[in-house]
Every structure is written in structure tokens, then in C-alpha cells.
Image (cartoon, rainbow over the protein chains, first blue to last red):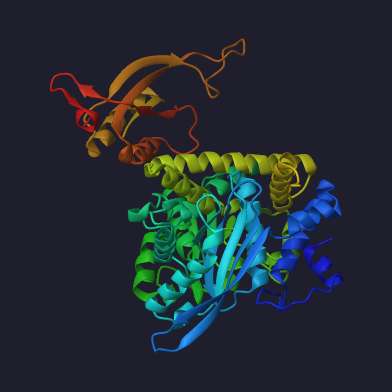
Length: 436
Length: 109
């Protein structure tokens, strides 16, 4: 039964902003249902399922902030540690007006599976503050960050829970987190957070890591599909950090990039696009609209263009039941989190298209975060090439494990990635035992 | 950090290889005559892989330029043109130029 059908059957309360074909689905319920389906494949009983589904620890905090105009505003903040079974919790902190407790719980659970499928010694966590940083000054964001860190201080730390950047949080925010935590400890603690600026213990290769991992996953998938690499056309949706670097790395390897887009729309050129020229235009105009390197195309049309590989690198819920049938790519690599709806997944499956799921495809980011954490703990830093080669090895092992499970159980890559991830967490649970 | 790039290639590509190294300010390489077989080697009448002539080239350079050198080497061969050899990248602990006593990166510039 599909996730959608199960959710409809269970009459899930659709209370958050996570929109699916016009319906609002509670992301935590989606995450729980995905886990339930995986538990059914693995024959896991209800009690164990509940243990895996519920977050290990959740902290809800109020974050009072003195605004620039002298007024006082109180924001809701969350830090959820879904699992610490395989290691400290790991996951980003996002600042967005749509942040909810349920969304953070779902994202924390997905981090558990992402870290497990790649084999990183982490559990999963996530945090967020319900706020609109675009309407706040830098000073207000800094004060909010520092107060939030002070509130969650007891549960984070390099061996407890390691935050990272997410929606609307960047290297500067991570530096404030590191500083606030360190000030409270009385000494510098670089390992408390990843995604830091290089000068504060950040890792070389971090900026392009998600895209590099995505690129490796695409190569491994093309290999097992037996597709020749020469002349392959890639359609990319999104030209943020992930989309740009993916385009650049793929172009360097002689692939043809036929589309690129920003939120207002994109461009299409079947002869191939030059990511550097697009980046120059984007830096100047903050959009790709009006760029003369190709024909204008909407973000929806982009998903349906004639191409071999489709890389959605923008938002969630882009490939839906209404457009999945028109996707021409034989391979979809999910650079974004959740770009394919569960219904669309079924349609792509029937069409014979292969989807490399987000928790595997875009796990290069958290993998290099892990490298940054290791380097921070050692206070010894690696070269960029060393980072990239280690990333490739980890991606290859993860891809092979998911591919083999997919072959063995005759299930698609998404289900297989979940089976691999949940099995690893469950195995760790069994080995550690229940206390008491 | 230093790396050694070892590659096996068909003798016909040697001059082009030297040109591309010079373009990247790499002023030295070692060339050894080699023989061997691989998956793409021709078969003899008995179905056994033929031992073929190749050159083994060794280049020691700074890690930062390894990817660029590899890109250059790959450009010598059209993609999917089989039997043109392999590239290996190996860490080098140290390098010493005996005549000047220079060591590390200076010894390979």
C-alpha cells in the first residue's frame, strides 16, 4: 500500500505546510508511515516499530529576543534527537516561518536513516525556530541564535548532538553556535557544530560535498543500469548550492547540462549549458530568468524535458502524480530532500525509471559534515582531495549496499535504502540492548 | 603533500603526454618500458590474453594539481576507447633532490 493510501486510510490530520497535490500532509505521519512499510518488509513487530518511530528526546523552548526597535519577541524553538543509538544525534537547524514540532520530528527521523544508510556513526537530529529571518536584521538573527543555543545547551555537544546548517542558516550562524557553546564551556569546542567557516575548523570540500555525492551516486547508478556515459543529458532543477555544484562537476566530467532553474523559472538548451556563465548571471541578477543562454522554461516544464537524468535539486514535492507520467528521464537523482511524492514514486516505478532516493543521493553533505567533525575532534585537517576521495569511497559502499539489497529483495532503491538504514539502526539497538 | 601518478599507456601517446605536462609546469617524468595484459588485451589462438607493449610513466607532483594532470591524461584518449591503460595515484612521503639537497615540494618543482 502506498504512503498516500495508508495516510488516507488512517485519516491523518493534515496540519502543516507540507503540501502534496494541494493536500497538506503531516510530515511526521509521512515519516512514520514510511518506517511502518519498511518494518513490514523486515517483519519487525509493533513494539519495536514504536521504539524506532518515536524520537528519543525532544526539547521545546521559548526564545525571547530583543528586537532592533526595542520590542521583545518570543519565538518557538525545537531540538529533536530522533535516535542516538548509532552515535550522537546529527542534523541541521532551520529558521523558517513554517517550522513545526512535527516537521522537526520528521526531519530528525530522516536524518537517522540518512546517517545509517551511509554508515556514519551518528543518530539523527534536527532543530528549528519558527521565525521569518528574511524580515529580521542580522543582529536580531544573531541574538536569536545565541539565546536558542543557550536554551538547548544541555542536550547538544560534540558527543551528544551536533547541529549543522539547514534552511536559512549558514556558516556564520554555525560560528555563533560554536561561540555560544564554547563561551559556556569555557574553552573552544570546534566539534559541537559542522558547516563552520574554514577559519573556525570547517572542512575543505564541504561546499560542493552534497553535489559531489550526488554525482558519484549518479555514476554508480548509470554503471549498474549498464548505460553508456557518452553524451548523457542531465536536467537540473534548482541553481542553489547543490544545483550549481552538481552542474559544474557533471560538466567537468563531459556530461551535458540541458536545464537549470531558480524559483521563478529556468532555461533549457538541448545543446548544453555552461554552469560558469549561469553562475555569473545568477550572481548579478539573483535569478536565471531572462538569461540568454537558453530558452525560457517553467519549473514544471523542466521536469518533463527530453533528457536522460533528472536531478531535482530545489524543493520538496516537485515530481507529483500529475507530472510523474511525463518525466522522460530514465534516472532521477534526488539532490533535494523529498522532491518525489509517494504517488509519483509508484508511477515512476511503473514506467521503469530508477530513482536514487534523497537519503542516499544527497548524503554527501552529511558525510563531509562527519569528516569536518572528525577533523575538529582531531584538530588536524585534511586536503580537499583527501576529503573528496574519502567521500567517494563512502558513497560507493553505501550505493553498493542499497543496490545489493534492492536486487536481493526485488524492491526499488528507495525501499531498499530504508531497509538498509532501518536494519542498521535495529541491529545497533539489539546489540546495545534495552536499559534496564 | 606529494603524490605519485603512475600510468600505463600506449607508446603512441607519449609525446602528447610530455606536452601536456610541460603545459602544467611539470618538468619531469620517468618512462619505463613495460609489458602486460589486461581485460581489453587481444587474445591469441588458444584464447589466452596477449602480453602487449606499454610504457609505464611515473610523475611526482603536488597533490593540488593531481586532478588537473589526470584530466589532461584522460584528454589524450577518447572516452570508451579501450586498452589505453590505467592511472594510479599513490601518496609519497618525501622527495629529495640529491644535487641541491632540496626536499619535499621544492624537490619536485
